[in-house]
Image (cartoon, rainbow, N blue to C red):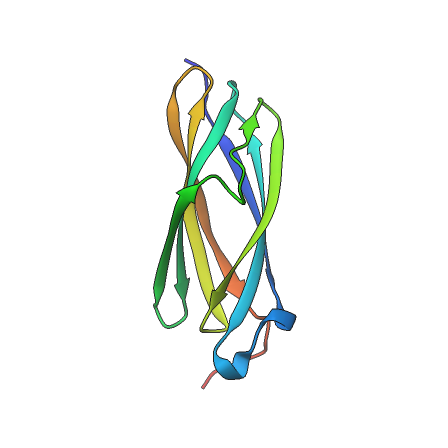
Length: 126
């Protein structure tokens, strides 16, 4: 049986120029690289994100594709995109999954491991 697998790499970044900490607005971007590490061409159909801020507030985001694309990746091929989110706290985390369909009709999910969103400020812990 062929292997169905996408690898996901994430590079988060704080966007101070789009943030207003005094108003509780912290903006982040994240650049995602998706690589088909499987043996069959497959298409990313939809995404599901769970975004949690430091206060425990959770946002769920579901939708077709990523940034308007539903990339079809041949084995070894990659697709990269950048998107973003806003939090009400200076730190938080994101995790999620992509729903994919291989050329042979096999359906599979690709998990996106949790990653940290952090404004990089040095904080004094009491």
